[in-house]
Image (cartoon, one colour):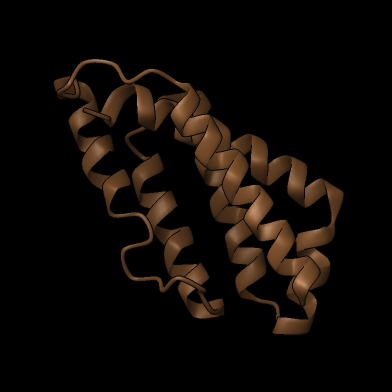
Length: 126
């Protein structure tokens, strides 16, 4: 279980670094991005700090909803995150540790979250 926590912390740290590494753009999002920014701001609102399976599915639905107003590259990344979160939401606790340590999961999830976080930081931060 401690390996799971270390891996999750590493994935979150990489995601946070991606957000901080990108300089924020204008203080207000463009009108065309306002819908995306509003939807993206709601991602994870219903999940706790350690989401359970049903909360993961809720966060996946949030990603799918926000992806509808994202540009194609970001939409693809967000749908990938949603798919991965849905897959995790169908596993029990013992299976989650194995899923989190899978190198394919880590690579795909990290790349997708970085794409999303970079776009969000560039368009919605202010």
